Amino acid sequence: MLLRGSGCAYKKCVFCDYHLDKCADVIANYSLNKSVLEKVTGIYSDLEVINSGSVFELDCDTLSLIKDVCARRAIKTLHFEAHYMYRNMIAGLRKQFDGIDVKMKLGLETFDYDMREKRLAKGIDEHDPSVICRGFDEANFLFGISGQTVESMSDDISLGLKHFERICVNLMCENSTDIKPDRDVISAFMREIYPLYINDPRVDILVNNTDFGVGD
Figure 1 (cartoon, rainbow, N blue to C red):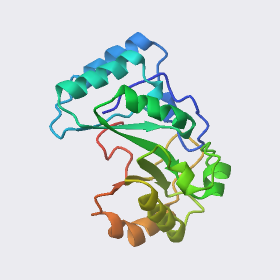
Figure 2: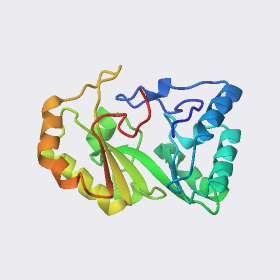
Figure 3: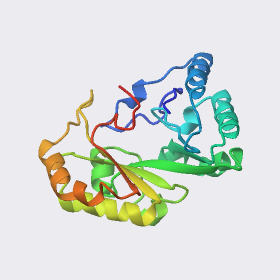
Figure 4: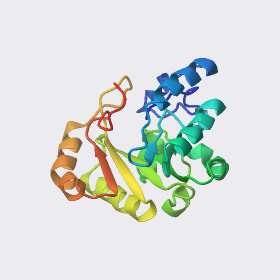
């Protein structure tokens, strides 16, 4: 379920232009989000909410409506995403959604510190995977960038499955940033790694960034 918020407060990830999907008008955002949330059926008792940023950038009325929709539609599990800088606010969010199993997803991209921070400017100034994962249940990884190898991507998946309940692998897609997909790296991933995890229930693989059925 794709909603709209005030926009990513971090905005420094050099590979990402999702932060352009934003609006400063809180009332307009709520109106749009309400129309989207009205479509929730609860058929799977599980809802993932994304908003081109962090859940903490959604307005209070939208958050209240999400909780109300979960109650009305008997949704038991709710997935949110947040940047690492919000990690100390997660406990409060879980308390706000008491009674619902809240799964928090981290946009990690890779455990490789140099790639993540010096190349991608992700803003996670921590090396230890056991520290990075605290408070988070799930993680996004970004593959298909020059400098990545079959070994580095395999290591990321192995560490991801060790420290998180589930992971989502995103292959780099062309966008407006200067970071471009490396077709050789993507081909290596599809040939060597994809077949090993395509049927793993703990691994989502997005070959295209719209494979979840949201976005343009």
